[in-house]
Image 1 (tube, rainbow, N blue to C red):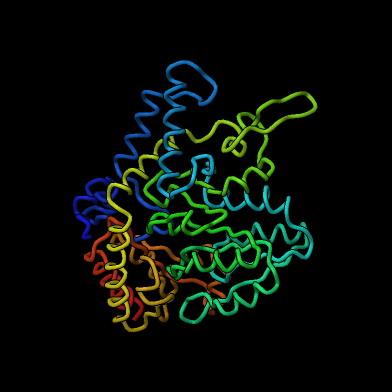
Image 2 (cartoon, one colour):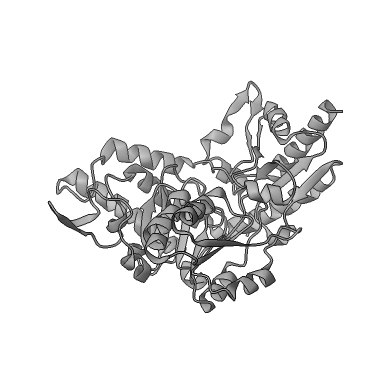
Length: 408
Protein backbone atom coordinates (compact mmCIF):
# COMPACT_ATOMS: atom_id res chain seq x y z
CA UNK A 1 0.00 0.00 0.00
CA UNK A 2 2.99 2.34 0.44
CA UNK A 3 3.34 5.17 -2.06
CA UNK A 4 6.63 5.96 -3.75
CA UNK A 5 6.33 9.58 -2.66
CA UNK A 6 9.75 10.60 -3.97
CA UNK A 7 8.76 9.38 -7.42
CA UNK A 8 5.38 11.12 -7.18
CA UNK A 9 7.06 14.39 -6.18
CA UNK A 10 8.98 14.39 -9.46
CA UNK A 11 5.64 14.86 -11.24
CA UNK A 12 5.00 18.17 -9.44
CA UNK A 13 7.40 20.83 -10.76
CA UNK A 14 6.34 23.48 -8.23
CA UNK A 15 7.80 21.35 -5.40
CA UNK A 16 11.26 22.24 -6.78
CA UNK A 17 10.49 25.93 -6.34
CA UNK A 18 12.65 28.00 -3.99
CA UNK A 19 10.71 30.78 -2.29
CA UNK A 20 14.03 32.37 -1.33
CA UNK A 21 17.57 31.39 -2.33
CA UNK A 22 18.24 28.00 -0.74
CA UNK A 23 14.71 27.72 0.72
CA UNK A 24 12.60 25.13 -1.07
CA UNK A 25 8.83 25.24 -0.69
CA UNK A 26 7.19 22.87 1.79
CA UNK A 27 3.60 22.89 0.57
CA UNK A 28 1.13 22.07 3.36
CA UNK A 29 -1.96 23.81 1.98
CA UNK A 30 -3.61 21.22 -0.26
CA UNK A 31 -6.96 21.66 1.47
CA UNK A 32 -7.08 25.13 -0.12
CA UNK A 33 -5.83 23.88 -3.48
CA UNK A 34 -3.64 21.00 -4.58
CA UNK A 35 -0.58 21.25 -6.75
CA UNK A 36 -0.73 20.01 -10.35
CA UNK A 37 1.33 17.21 -11.89
CA UNK A 38 3.17 17.85 -15.12
CA UNK A 39 0.82 15.43 -16.89
CA UNK A 40 -2.12 17.81 -16.27
CA UNK A 41 -0.13 20.90 -17.21
CA UNK A 42 1.12 19.34 -20.44
CA UNK A 43 -2.31 18.00 -21.41
CA UNK A 44 -3.83 21.48 -21.17
CA UNK A 45 -0.94 23.01 -23.10
CA UNK A 46 -1.27 20.32 -25.76
CA UNK A 47 -4.99 21.01 -26.12
CA UNK A 48 -4.31 24.70 -26.78
CA UNK A 49 -1.43 23.93 -29.14
CA UNK A 50 -3.16 21.23 -31.20
CA UNK A 51 -6.95 21.00 -30.73
CA UNK A 52 -8.32 24.35 -29.55
CA UNK A 53 -11.84 24.89 -30.90
CA UNK A 54 -15.35 25.37 -29.55
CA UNK A 55 -17.28 22.22 -28.77
CA UNK A 56 -20.60 20.72 -29.90
CA UNK A 57 -20.94 23.27 -32.71
CA UNK A 58 -18.54 22.40 -35.48
CA UNK A 59 -17.91 19.49 -37.82
CA UNK A 60 -14.33 20.39 -38.63
CA UNK A 61 -11.45 18.32 -37.27
CA UNK A 62 -10.47 20.63 -34.41
CA UNK A 63 -14.04 21.00 -33.16
CA UNK A 64 -14.58 17.26 -33.21
CA UNK A 65 -11.30 16.67 -31.37
CA UNK A 66 -12.14 19.28 -28.72
CA UNK A 67 -15.63 17.84 -28.23
CA UNK A 68 -14.25 14.33 -27.90
CA UNK A 69 -11.72 15.44 -25.29
CA UNK A 70 -14.29 17.44 -23.32
CA UNK A 71 -16.87 14.66 -23.27
CA UNK A 72 -14.18 12.01 -22.75
CA UNK A 73 -13.17 13.76 -19.54
CA UNK A 74 -16.80 13.65 -18.39
CA UNK A 75 -16.83 9.88 -18.94
CA UNK A 76 -13.65 9.51 -16.85
CA UNK A 77 -15.10 11.59 -14.01
CA UNK A 78 -18.35 9.59 -14.04
CA UNK A 79 -16.36 6.36 -13.77
CA UNK A 80 -14.16 7.84 -11.02
CA UNK A 81 -17.17 8.49 -8.74
CA UNK A 82 -19.16 5.52 -10.11
CA UNK A 83 -22.06 7.57 -11.49
CA UNK A 84 -24.63 5.46 -13.29
CA UNK A 85 -24.22 7.62 -16.41
CA UNK A 86 -22.04 10.50 -17.59
CA UNK A 87 -25.34 12.37 -18.13
CA UNK A 88 -25.40 12.74 -14.33
CA UNK A 89 -22.10 14.66 -14.33
CA UNK A 90 -22.68 18.40 -14.77
CA UNK A 91 -19.67 20.66 -15.29
CA UNK A 92 -19.65 23.78 -13.11
CA UNK A 93 -16.94 26.25 -12.11
CA UNK A 94 -16.39 24.73 -8.67
CA UNK A 95 -18.07 23.15 -5.64
CA UNK A 96 -19.59 26.51 -4.70
CA UNK A 97 -21.35 26.84 -8.04
CA UNK A 98 -22.50 23.22 -7.84
CA UNK A 99 -24.20 23.87 -4.48
CA UNK A 100 -25.70 27.11 -5.81
CA UNK A 101 -27.02 25.22 -8.83
CA UNK A 102 -28.98 22.95 -6.48
CA UNK A 103 -30.15 25.94 -4.44
CA UNK A 104 -31.40 27.80 -7.50
CA UNK A 105 -32.63 25.07 -9.85
CA UNK A 106 -33.87 22.43 -7.39
CA UNK A 107 -34.63 24.21 -4.12
CA UNK A 108 -36.32 27.28 -5.62
CA UNK A 109 -38.61 25.00 -7.58
CA UNK A 110 -39.34 22.61 -4.70
CA UNK A 111 -39.15 24.48 -1.37
CA UNK A 112 -41.70 26.84 0.14
CA UNK A 113 -42.11 28.90 3.31
CA UNK A 114 -41.61 26.80 6.43
CA UNK A 115 -39.83 23.90 4.73
CA UNK A 116 -36.85 22.68 6.76
CA UNK A 117 -33.29 22.39 5.45
CA UNK A 118 -30.79 20.66 7.76
CA UNK A 119 -27.12 21.69 7.60
CA UNK A 120 -24.25 21.19 10.08
CA UNK A 121 -22.16 23.49 12.24
CA UNK A 122 -18.99 22.49 10.37
CA UNK A 123 -20.04 23.68 6.91
CA UNK A 124 -17.92 25.79 4.59
CA UNK A 125 -19.54 29.12 3.74
CA UNK A 126 -20.38 27.74 0.28
CA UNK A 127 -22.83 25.35 1.96
CA UNK A 128 -24.25 28.01 4.27
CA UNK A 129 -24.70 31.24 2.33
CA UNK A 130 -26.85 29.84 -0.54
CA UNK A 131 -29.31 28.54 2.06
CA UNK A 132 -29.27 31.82 4.00
CA UNK A 133 -30.14 33.56 0.73
CA UNK A 134 -33.00 31.14 0.10
CA UNK A 135 -34.21 31.62 3.67
CA UNK A 136 -34.39 35.39 3.12
CA UNK A 137 -36.18 34.92 -0.21
CA UNK A 138 -38.56 32.06 0.57
CA UNK A 139 -38.83 31.87 4.35
CA UNK A 140 -37.50 28.32 4.60
CA UNK A 141 -36.26 27.15 8.00
CA UNK A 142 -32.65 26.19 8.70
CA UNK A 143 -31.43 23.98 11.51
CA UNK A 144 -28.05 22.49 12.25
CA UNK A 145 -26.49 19.22 13.35
CA UNK A 146 -24.20 20.23 16.24
CA UNK A 147 -20.48 19.51 16.36
CA UNK A 148 -19.19 17.85 19.54
CA UNK A 149 -16.10 18.97 21.43
CA UNK A 150 -14.22 16.13 19.75
CA UNK A 151 -15.14 17.53 16.34
CA UNK A 152 -17.73 14.93 15.35
CA UNK A 153 -21.34 15.40 14.28
CA UNK A 154 -23.94 14.76 16.98
CA UNK A 155 -25.99 12.11 15.19
CA UNK A 156 -28.48 11.73 18.04
CA UNK A 157 -29.50 15.36 17.58
CA UNK A 158 -29.63 14.74 13.82
CA UNK A 159 -32.10 11.91 14.36
CA UNK A 160 -34.33 14.19 16.45
CA UNK A 161 -34.19 16.88 13.75
CA UNK A 162 -35.39 14.30 11.24
CA UNK A 163 -38.65 14.01 13.18
CA UNK A 164 -39.47 17.45 11.72
CA UNK A 165 -39.51 15.94 8.20
CA UNK A 166 -36.90 18.09 6.44
CA UNK A 167 -37.06 18.53 2.69
CA UNK A 168 -33.29 18.78 2.21
CA UNK A 169 -30.16 17.75 4.10
CA UNK A 170 -26.85 19.24 2.97
CA UNK A 171 -23.56 18.40 4.66
CA UNK A 172 -19.82 18.14 4.10
CA UNK A 173 -18.35 14.68 3.64
CA UNK A 174 -15.06 15.89 5.16
CA UNK A 175 -14.48 19.09 7.13
CA UNK A 176 -11.96 21.50 5.66
CA UNK A 177 -11.01 22.63 9.19
CA UNK A 178 -11.33 19.64 11.50
CA UNK A 179 -10.58 16.99 8.89
CA UNK A 180 -13.54 15.00 10.24
CA UNK A 181 -14.73 12.33 7.80
CA UNK A 182 -18.46 12.21 8.37
CA UNK A 183 -20.44 8.94 8.11
CA UNK A 184 -21.99 9.98 4.80
CA UNK A 185 -23.79 6.71 4.00
CA UNK A 186 -25.54 6.70 7.38
CA UNK A 187 -26.49 10.38 7.20
CA UNK A 188 -27.90 9.87 3.69
CA UNK A 189 -29.81 6.71 4.63
CA UNK A 190 -31.42 8.36 7.66
CA UNK A 191 -32.27 11.42 5.56
CA UNK A 192 -33.94 9.31 2.90
CA UNK A 193 -35.90 7.43 5.55
CA UNK A 194 -37.28 10.82 6.63
CA UNK A 195 -38.23 11.67 3.04
CA UNK A 196 -35.47 14.23 2.41
CA UNK A 197 -33.26 14.86 -0.60
CA UNK A 198 -29.55 14.82 0.35
CA UNK A 199 -26.74 16.97 -1.05
CA UNK A 200 -23.11 16.21 -0.14
CA UNK A 201 -20.24 18.73 -0.31
CA UNK A 202 -17.43 16.47 -1.48
CA UNK A 203 -14.79 19.15 -2.07
CA UNK A 204 -12.47 17.63 0.54
CA UNK A 205 -13.43 13.96 0.17
CA UNK A 206 -13.20 13.19 -3.55
CA UNK A 207 -9.48 14.16 -3.71
CA UNK A 208 -8.55 11.93 -0.78
CA UNK A 209 -11.02 9.04 -0.48
CA UNK A 210 -12.55 6.54 -2.85
CA UNK A 211 -16.07 7.91 -3.38
CA UNK A 212 -18.88 5.84 -4.88
CA UNK A 213 -21.97 8.01 -5.30
CA UNK A 214 -24.22 5.03 -6.02
CA UNK A 215 -23.07 3.13 -2.93
CA UNK A 216 -23.60 6.26 -0.83
CA UNK A 217 -26.97 6.80 -2.55
CA UNK A 218 -26.33 10.56 -2.64
CA UNK A 219 -28.93 12.59 -4.51
CA UNK A 220 -26.45 15.35 -5.28
CA UNK A 221 -22.66 15.36 -4.80
CA UNK A 222 -20.45 18.41 -5.44
CA UNK A 223 -16.66 18.68 -5.88
CA UNK A 224 -13.87 20.68 -7.57
CA UNK A 225 -10.98 19.76 -9.86
CA UNK A 226 -8.44 22.10 -8.28
CA UNK A 227 -8.34 20.19 -4.99
CA UNK A 228 -7.63 16.88 -6.77
CA UNK A 229 -4.55 17.70 -8.89
CA UNK A 230 -6.66 19.35 -11.59
CA UNK A 231 -6.99 22.95 -12.78
CA UNK A 232 -8.94 25.79 -11.20
CA UNK A 233 -12.17 27.01 -12.72
CA UNK A 234 -13.98 23.70 -13.15
CA UNK A 235 -15.99 21.46 -10.84
CA UNK A 236 -18.81 18.95 -10.95
CA UNK A 237 -22.31 18.55 -9.70
CA UNK A 238 -23.33 14.89 -9.73
CA UNK A 239 -27.07 14.41 -9.53
CA UNK A 240 -29.42 11.49 -9.93
CA UNK A 241 -30.87 11.76 -13.43
CA UNK A 242 -34.48 11.75 -12.21
CA UNK A 243 -33.78 14.83 -10.08
CA UNK A 244 -31.78 16.63 -12.76
CA UNK A 245 -34.47 15.95 -15.34
CA UNK A 246 -37.09 17.54 -13.08
CA UNK A 247 -35.09 20.74 -12.54
CA UNK A 248 -35.34 23.91 -14.66
CA UNK A 249 -32.13 25.25 -16.25
CA UNK A 250 -29.76 27.26 -14.06
CA UNK A 251 -28.40 29.66 -16.72
CA UNK A 252 -29.79 30.54 -20.13
CA UNK A 253 -27.89 30.93 -23.38
CA UNK A 254 -26.10 28.88 -25.98
CA UNK A 255 -25.66 25.11 -25.80
CA UNK A 256 -28.25 24.60 -23.05
CA UNK A 257 -31.12 24.73 -25.55
CA UNK A 258 -32.80 22.28 -27.89
CA UNK A 259 -34.80 24.95 -29.71
CA UNK A 260 -35.22 28.71 -29.42
CA UNK A 261 -38.00 30.87 -30.86
CA UNK A 262 -38.64 34.56 -30.33
CA UNK A 263 -41.20 33.86 -27.62
CA UNK A 264 -40.15 30.47 -26.22
CA UNK A 265 -37.40 27.88 -25.88
CA UNK A 266 -36.96 24.19 -25.14
CA UNK A 267 -34.03 23.19 -22.92
CA UNK A 268 -31.43 20.67 -24.01
CA UNK A 269 -31.11 17.17 -22.61
CA UNK A 270 -28.79 16.23 -19.75
CA UNK A 271 -26.09 17.16 -19.04
CA UNK A 272 -26.07 20.09 -21.46
CA UNK A 273 -29.24 21.64 -19.99
CA UNK A 274 -27.09 23.03 -17.16
CA UNK A 275 -24.02 24.05 -19.19
CA UNK A 276 -24.79 27.37 -20.86
CA UNK A 277 -22.25 29.09 -23.08
CA UNK A 278 -18.70 28.16 -24.00
CA UNK A 279 -17.40 26.02 -21.13
CA UNK A 280 -13.97 25.55 -19.58
CA UNK A 281 -12.78 23.14 -22.29
CA UNK A 282 -9.06 23.07 -21.54
CA UNK A 283 -9.85 22.76 -17.84
CA UNK A 284 -12.11 19.78 -18.55
CA UNK A 285 -9.23 18.16 -20.44
CA UNK A 286 -6.96 18.78 -17.45
CA UNK A 287 -9.63 17.47 -15.08
CA UNK A 288 -9.81 14.21 -17.03
CA UNK A 289 -6.05 13.77 -16.87
CA UNK A 290 -6.05 14.53 -13.13
CA UNK A 291 -8.60 11.74 -12.66
CA UNK A 292 -6.35 9.44 -14.71
CA UNK A 293 -3.41 10.40 -12.51
CA UNK A 294 -5.20 9.76 -9.21
CA UNK A 295 -6.64 6.49 -10.53
CA UNK A 296 -3.19 5.28 -11.57
CA UNK A 297 -1.76 6.05 -8.11
CA UNK A 298 -4.82 4.48 -6.43
CA UNK A 299 -7.25 6.22 -4.10
CA UNK A 300 -6.91 3.57 -1.40
CA UNK A 301 -3.15 4.04 -1.41
CA UNK A 302 -3.51 7.82 -1.25
CA UNK A 303 -5.88 7.53 1.74
CA UNK A 304 -3.52 5.11 3.51
CA UNK A 305 -0.53 7.40 2.93
CA UNK A 306 -2.39 10.43 4.26
CA UNK A 307 -3.52 8.46 7.31
CA UNK A 308 0.11 7.64 8.14
CA UNK A 309 1.11 11.27 7.74
CA UNK A 310 -1.72 12.75 9.82
CA UNK A 311 -1.15 10.20 12.57
CA UNK A 312 2.52 11.21 12.70
CA UNK A 313 1.70 14.93 12.41
CA UNK A 314 -0.81 14.89 15.28
CA UNK A 315 1.68 13.04 17.50
CA UNK A 316 4.45 15.53 16.72
CA UNK A 317 2.25 18.62 17.09
CA UNK A 318 0.89 17.42 20.44
CA UNK A 319 4.47 17.40 21.75
CA UNK A 320 4.76 21.17 21.35
CA UNK A 321 3.89 23.15 24.50
CA UNK A 322 1.13 25.67 23.80
CA UNK A 323 -0.23 23.98 20.69
CA UNK A 324 -3.93 23.14 20.75
CA UNK A 325 -5.27 20.84 18.03
CA UNK A 326 -8.84 20.84 16.74
CA UNK A 327 -10.76 17.89 15.38
CA UNK A 328 -10.96 14.18 16.13
CA UNK A 329 -8.24 11.56 16.39
CA UNK A 330 -6.39 10.39 13.27
CA UNK A 331 -8.65 7.38 12.72
CA UNK A 332 -11.68 9.66 12.26
CA UNK A 333 -10.18 12.33 10.02
CA UNK A 334 -8.32 13.06 6.81
CA UNK A 335 -4.97 14.78 6.37
CA UNK A 336 -5.85 18.09 8.04
CA UNK A 337 -4.33 19.53 11.21
CA UNK A 338 -5.86 22.80 12.43
CA UNK A 339 -4.23 24.28 15.52
CA UNK A 340 -3.57 27.35 17.61
CA UNK A 341 -0.34 28.33 19.37
CA UNK A 342 -0.77 29.99 22.73
CA UNK A 343 0.06 33.70 22.66
CA UNK A 344 0.60 33.89 18.89
CA UNK A 345 -1.96 34.87 16.25
CA UNK A 346 -2.42 32.22 13.53
CA UNK A 347 -1.46 34.74 10.84
CA UNK A 348 1.85 35.38 12.61
CA UNK A 349 2.46 31.63 12.77
CA UNK A 350 1.86 31.32 9.03
CA UNK A 351 4.02 34.32 8.13
CA UNK A 352 6.98 33.15 10.18
CA UNK A 353 6.72 29.60 8.81
CA UNK A 354 6.73 31.09 5.32
CA UNK A 355 10.24 32.44 5.92
CA UNK A 356 11.38 28.81 5.87
CA UNK A 357 9.27 28.06 2.81
CA UNK A 358 6.54 26.28 4.81
CA UNK A 359 3.12 27.06 3.32
CA UNK A 360 0.20 26.68 5.75
CA UNK A 361 -3.16 28.41 5.88
CA UNK A 362 -4.26 30.88 8.56
CA UNK A 363 -7.70 32.32 9.21
CA UNK A 364 -11.23 31.02 9.57
CA UNK A 365 -10.95 28.94 6.35
CA UNK A 366 -14.41 30.05 5.18
CA UNK A 367 -15.91 28.38 8.25
CA UNK A 368 -16.54 31.26 10.65
CA UNK A 369 -19.45 29.62 12.53
CA UNK A 370 -17.30 26.57 13.29
CA UNK A 371 -14.54 28.76 14.74
CA UNK A 372 -17.12 30.64 16.79
CA UNK A 373 -18.34 27.27 18.10
CA UNK A 374 -14.86 26.66 19.52
CA UNK A 375 -14.53 30.23 20.77
CA UNK A 376 -11.64 31.25 18.52
CA UNK A 377 -11.34 33.73 15.63
CA UNK A 378 -8.91 31.68 13.56
CA UNK A 379 -6.58 28.68 13.34
CA UNK A 380 -3.43 27.76 11.52
CA UNK A 381 -3.98 24.76 9.25
CA UNK A 382 -1.51 22.29 7.77
CA UNK A 383 -2.96 19.90 5.23
CA UNK A 384 -1.37 16.96 3.49
CA UNK A 385 -1.69 15.12 0.18
CA UNK A 386 -0.09 12.33 -1.80
CA UNK A 387 3.13 14.32 -2.39
CA UNK A 388 3.86 15.15 1.26
CA UNK A 389 6.44 13.37 3.44
CA UNK A 390 7.14 12.72 7.10
CA UNK A 391 10.21 14.95 6.75
CA UNK A 392 7.91 17.84 5.88
CA UNK A 393 6.00 17.24 9.11
CA UNK A 394 9.32 17.54 10.95
CA UNK A 395 10.04 20.82 9.15
CA UNK A 396 6.63 22.11 10.25
CA UNK A 397 7.27 21.15 13.87
CA UNK A 398 10.74 22.72 13.85
CA UNK A 399 9.22 25.85 12.34
CA UNK A 400 6.63 26.11 15.11
CA UNK A 401 9.40 25.85 17.70
CA UNK A 402 11.08 28.79 15.94
CA UNK A 403 7.83 30.76 16.21
CA UNK A 404 7.72 30.01 19.95
CA UNK A 405 11.29 31.25 20.36
CA UNK A 406 10.53 34.50 18.52
CA UNK A 407 7.51 35.19 20.74
CA UNK A 408 9.30 34.20 23.92
